[in-house]
Image (cartoon, rainbow, N blue to C red; front, side, top):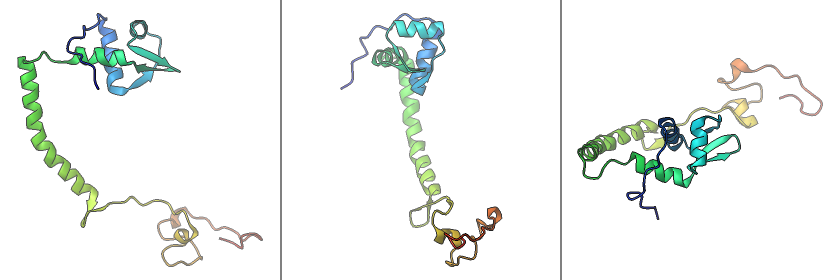
Length: 152
């Protein structure tokens, strides 16, 4: 259940404190630097110091939401809603294009080659133990035989 912030008074903060609060809302946390804006937000109970970082407190999240909210039924809110609804039409198509780009035919995910983790992968696709597979060859060095391993 979320708090009703429509009736919440917006705290009086300096412009620098609002900028920092907004930054924390977007990033989640940031390194604490001991600035006056940080001290102002901490004293107001809007941010928490966690180790060497600042994090948004629940009161800070509510204050930011009240500050960022457009006035209900204002021209700005109507314009924002209209723009968002127009965006949604293109977003559906954009998401489809991204999904198609990430999948091979037959809806199989594309994969990125990864370094081998077993001796079979090291040997190449033939299973031979005479040396590395073709993609690994440029970085391979001969390994002398040892009494415990008998070579590679």
